[in-house]
Image (cartoon, rainbow, N blue to C red):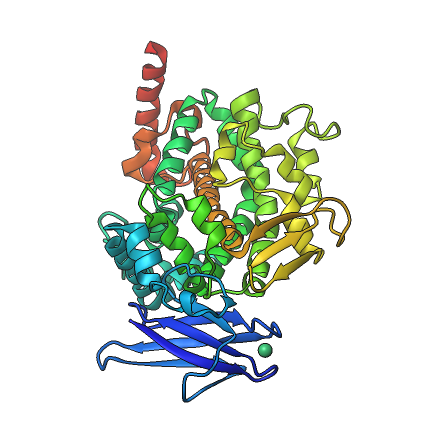
Length: 461
Ligand SMILES: [Zn+2]
């Protein structure tokens, strides 16, 4: 259903006809601008499904009782991409609703799946996130007194005994996976398979252990940063919904064309730009780990950096010391195996422009024109639309799930090295990654036995 109303701007008095698509979200944010004086018009749409009621609350405009003589026209939707704001004309006013045009026609039968997946995730945010969040917090704080009890509120005790650090980590990881799997799509499966295959191909298990030890003191910091990013994303998820919908477009639609043509009314550029900058900043340090795995894979030495990228950066310690996170990204350009973690090309040009405010944003076309030089009007400008930018943020978020996976695997190597392995998993570890320091005496015998077996296996290989 579409509700059409005319609203008058409280500043310039111009009238905008706003066609509000009522879909299946109980409430959603509205972020648009006045077409004439460019001030923000913002608020929420609330839907009361049971009583078939609704309310549209917008700031900086006044609802006209009668339909007026509008100068601008815009559609608003919480679920779908919409036509951008444009000068009013009667022909335009008869346009199909977003539901038909950018929902049913674009997604086809996938639209049901889109609805179900979004609603499921919103339900999880409301009901499960507080528990998953506090479990993560207990983990970061090293508070293992309450942690198992909290974990067993959500996970089966037999499958997840949570009786040592390795098991606690595994349970926390599974809970995070179960929570985020709605929006990671195929990416999670693809990236974990890729990471596993790469680890399997690394013959020198000892290097994996050395690598893990090298990063031991940083892993907690990495985990916390990634968790912080996920938390921010969850708080903003409503703004991302129409972009998430792109995942469900049927193949015959040219997404690149759609994304340039259509706009978003759930988010304003200013609402989201800090998320981009902060995420970029936070993953800057975690790049150290990605690059290290590349070194191991491509140069058989986790310390040896890729040559001819930056002359002075020869070993991983040089890289870790680099302050310029943009330049650090030059080592991740899609050529090496673990670069695959990044869903889209993460480059410093946009970040630099936003960070230095060297951009202009057109509120009508939703086009961002930016100067990668970091100075307005200096050098060549580049541009992208708000939809493309929000998609970038979304892809960056997905990349963080891949980063979290690699941090998780590194921590597992660390535990194995410390002799902390659950009994059931001991067979998985090759002899070269076998624990040297056996902390738990009751496990000594089992580990020894497996070690012998593994050694025999190695010999026959
Ligand atoms: Zn105005």
